[in-house]
Length: 155
Image (cartoon, rainbow, N blue to C red; front, top):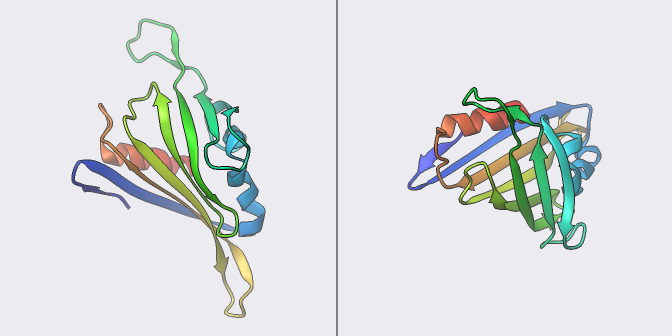
């Protein structure tokens, strides 16, 4: 799981999928601007600038509206503008950073990896493993275990 190391928070969560190969799952991550198709509670994601599939691509993501926590009514829409900083289709991983947001991230970088799971000793792929790792500054009002819990429930 995650451990606090100095002023930064770091963590990694993973999940294994049976019956879906890494090659079948990778396109969902490679398509950087369509995360809303598989990420729960994310309402929209679209390209802001840059070239699809290339580092330097920016996307805008917004969650579904949530009731305000102060009980005074109205909805809050959490959003982020993120930059693709690395993509490697051969090794099936992407890295990105949050550039702007209204969720308290001052510094946040993450990597998704899609790895094959070889099962029967004969080299036959039996599924895949998705790993989501991150490094970020502490987030005001959150604990590191809250960040990890969110990632675990999402993945």
